[in-house]
Length: 145
Image (cartoon, rainbow, N blue to C red):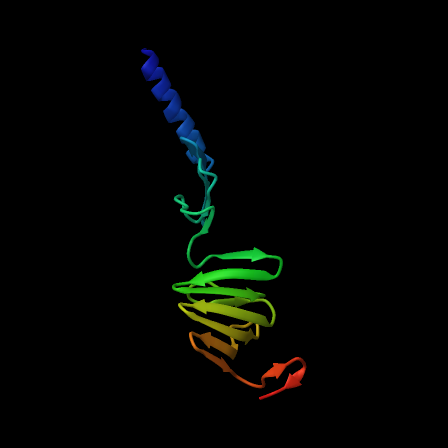
């Protein structure tokens, strides 16, 4: 048997073993696959969660969430959400307790209070040239509107 054939068989065996254990490396890419997605690190030190082709240092597939303590960053379509105790899956809100939510939508910033069960109450919206406030406006501890 030729040296090339032995190397080829060895590579096929290694890939088969790696795929069996759902963890493999091909030319510097490290990928761990699970039944719910994958985590990938590239030779450029980029990490992808739910994607094997991250385009920035850390990329999470859309409708995923990143949690830091009680803060959650999620994305649904053209929106980005930063909230405590709640995140958006792309089709539904998942919450654990009441909190606050900031939504970035194009050139608009929306502020909400949430009840932890998907219910939201708008409190302020900022758009170019306009600020809309629901409720009272307080400045330096004094109500002015």
